[in-house]
Length: 429
Image 1 (cartoon, rainbow, N blue to C red):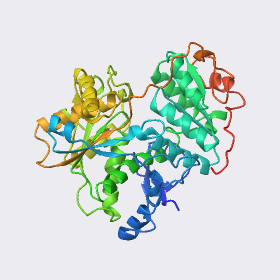
Image 2 (cartoon, helix red, strand yellow):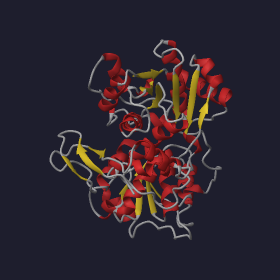
Image 3 (cartoon, rainbow, N blue to C red):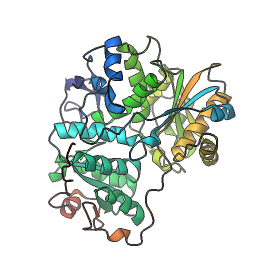
Image 4 (cartoon, rainbow, N blue to C red):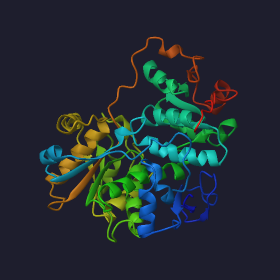
């Protein structure tokens, strides 16, 4: 049974029963999911969870969506003790939440699984997103396992081998003659009009449910620490949804009696210096976040105008944490140190988290003996063996790469006329 919930407008506070709406119908503000009481609390809830499967879905009593088919391998990733790295950065009790162990190699598998659970409830059969990396692979793989079609919009500049890797999981990959920001705007427009409106745009129209997948990272951390919360958690930031979901989930864990009553962990948010608008606002004592133009070695964190920036600022301050900008020249050495000392191969965002952890410790912002969890949100996986014929995959198997289109909804609709192929159902799904 899923947890009851409602939608609340972040701007005007309007509350409504959950429905598939993208924005507040009163003021067009963004919507947050507000969880209702779970079916049990305290020891009874803990027993239900511990009897559940070794995946994010053991926390079904805390989630507002059902599991989609094929999502039983998502989550329950390792919480690794990191004594060698901790010694190097000055944190005696350091742990790594290693999200590279997910099927597509990042925490995006969780958020996509949550979004697809809601999409199927709503009768949607095609998952869609704009992405060049982790989200694209999570949508392609998650949709395939769930028996859904998938469309992924990518900038035309994305190399053919990367396109092929996304198509290999069954997605229809649509190159768009535009940069990533314009491609993302196309996704927003396509989620509102025409035949593409009925697609499950996982991080646009389904965003309130999508972000709930990240909450399970906090759930797992608490359970893996013996049903207690750490003193501090360090999380990378792009949009801010991941860090904000962690903070809210830790607060909720205490509210439902799964962990002892008390304050949530100090939330420390890590940004690369080449894209650190929230860190700049934190340092200036500001409440508003001024957009920046990203120029960073950590592409998965290159969001210059993060939608959850003000909320992350508030959460970091309320929890006695903060927001740290890591100099660009420190990212690669920190990434390498993580691999050499703990055997964890992370994407550059992991280097940002390690660099931030070192800076927080050096500044004396952690109490002696503090338990600190650093979130490694994605792995440094080579996606595909180079294939000179990759751009010409159209028509080969369930996935394909279409022709390049201009950034318009009409061009997108024309290119995928009839819709993407839906993966065939398999036994025991």
